[in-house]
Image (tube, rainbow, N blue to C red; front, side, top):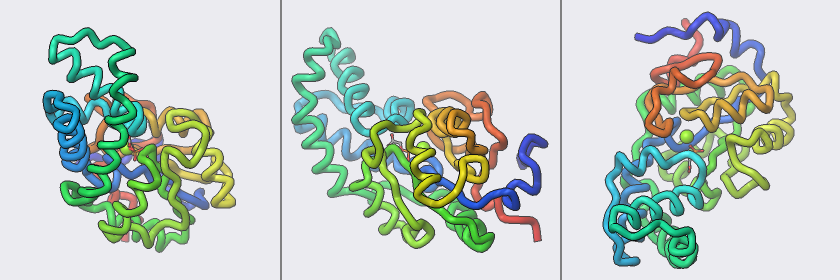
Length: 239
Ligand SMILES: O=C(O)COP(=O)(O)O
Ligand SMILES: [Mg+2]
């Protein structure tokens, strides 16, 4: 089992007031939901389907980025030059269809990662204030958290549309810290990708990454962070 590196002091949780928790790839394995909603959307547009593996590498920078990247991928597979104009011409209908399908299946092809609820319970028991901070649209994040019985842990839920910019920009973290009445130095970011880590570093938040999520197809330990865990339950203080 991987243990926390020395860079993550055992006392880290004692030096915190708050925690910001990422959603996709950190709390919930949503790749099945992404695949189902994207492939239903692609079928509506009479475009070829996309493999979950190709989707996984494209998750993390929000739904608008995901959709453009998926359209670009399937158009090039279909032998069509991925001219920006094609994508932009398809985008409004793609977005409308994607939203429709995602909301219809939200959570049905997704599962909470082992140890995630236990980890959140431990953070709550440590009296830390908690917000969910995701690049997923708020309208997708709220029903997903509720469907997976994770909503009760969070005072606030900030989606990718909550602020002017998304992770890896530090702005969402800075605004979420302010909303929780905490300072970045005393607010831990828990995430799964370089987007979470870069945003945290730029905001001045400590950051711990899970090893099992979506990091654009790259090993997560390549990403600069204060620690890595194989399950959020590892954050529970040793008895
Ligand atoms: O929807 C995404 O692109 C990723 O969402 P996340 O920030 O919860 O990982
Ligand atoms: Mg994530």
